Image (cartoon, helix red, strand yellow):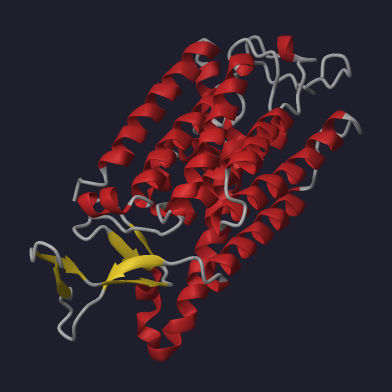
Length: 368
């Protein structure tokens, strides 16, 4: 990348050390995505619907980010790909994910069978050799819009509850609501990761932490023994995703070696859009998307800081004739830079917050 002079286009925003980054190789997301896709293709079962979905997510968002970077770097257009085309790509991915989860017969969740009173049915099994009796719950694999919600006794939330008032129509309306939720989650998390990629190692390290946490959640959700012990939903065939997330963690940590301060390479939109989308789709697949505000809290804070800044500026401009700001600059990591905090310290502290949020996310499995 240095040889090809694929350098970062840097605008002077008055931030300390910013202009020193001019010319640093960008589009390093190609390295990250390659380090995810190649090991997954080699080691994972490619007939697994969840693996296919994750590869489609990685490739599609990678292409969108690549086009954006290409326009900025090679065509010298600082605006990059128009926002409407990015949104269109993210929405299209959301529709693909929602349609796959709805149509594929391999996408099911194992649930306890209930009797007419709503109690879990049990059956008695007798060992033919010893005659020993064991009692176990009667289960079945069903297609459902159920997901995990933290801090609640049964730890489950069903999107169907949102349209229960529609009567029989709720059987298909729940999938419409589910699809809308998926599109919103993918779009918001993908863009939030893009906003977070403003300091050396910030988005990369945060993504690695979130990815490791999702790997733990995927493993216990795909292991019937641990799922039963933790009293969480068991998702058949989900365990294969640990191969993908292992590649994801390896790719982000490996890239962080060169992306840490002072960065020798930037990921660009090729990487940031894809990383956010991967975390979003992975969370949706393992039915943990409601945990995203906690797990990806750094992304959420970064996104909210921009939203608050923009809307408050517009509101005060209408009311007072001049725009006012809540933060010195948004996203919020630039606010701390303006306050004179060194870039490396900001990134390290954000990582610490990310680790704390990751621990809390795992703890929600038993905090009810």
